[in-house]
Amino acid sequence: MNKKQKKIRRIINKKIPFNSQKGYTVVELLAVMVILAIIGSVIVGIVSSTLRGAGKATSLNEIRQVGNNRLTGVSKMIEFARSFDGISIDGLTYQDNCIVEFVVPSLAPTEYHYLKVTNFTNNQLIFSCSNDLGTNEPTFASNSASLIDTTTIDVTNCSFTCSQNYLTQPPIIGIYFTLSKKSTGSVIGSALISFETNVTMRNLRR
Image (tube, rainbow, N blue to C red; front, side, top):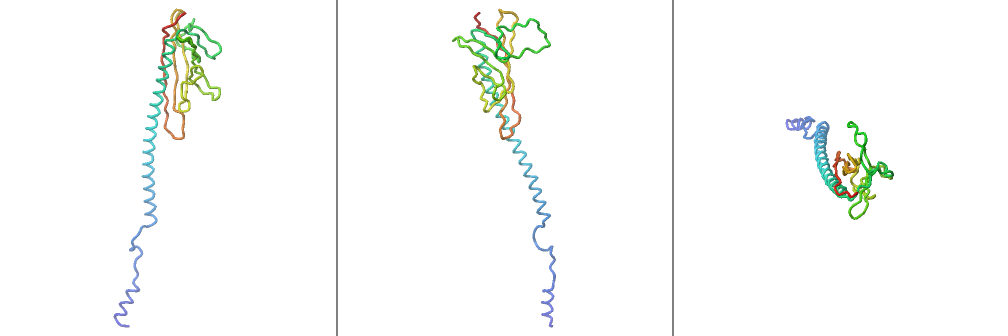
């Protein structure tokens, strides 16, 4: 075997190290996947938080607008009513005045669920804050017609109060209700607002 053949034999038999070949190991690929998963979860969390905040702000604005409109409308109808026809807890027995004989300052005022007034066109209006018989949920209604679109908004609390020091004094009617956004498939966070006002009846004819 001459020198040239020996040189060729050495080149053929020479071992090439495995780690000299270009490429990624399984460990490196797994590390990259873990890093990408962490970055993805952080991005999803930020986007989800932003969407929840935007959804909550939108819901609060919607509820605030509806509540203020209903509170203003009902307040005006009560304030300028022609007569006060009574207030009731159960809708069956009405009392025609709001005088309390023994006033205990520490006690909260009685919460009523029905209020009757007559407007200047001689139409009687019955405002109610009672549980709907079908859903057992509070409703805010006028002559049985709901004042709130319950397909998108829930009435979570509703009541009236009434106070008078003497018969010749016009009743002062308190209106209280709380609205919240109806739950949907998407999570938007808590969106609940309370509304309240006191109305002095000005145009009573006795």
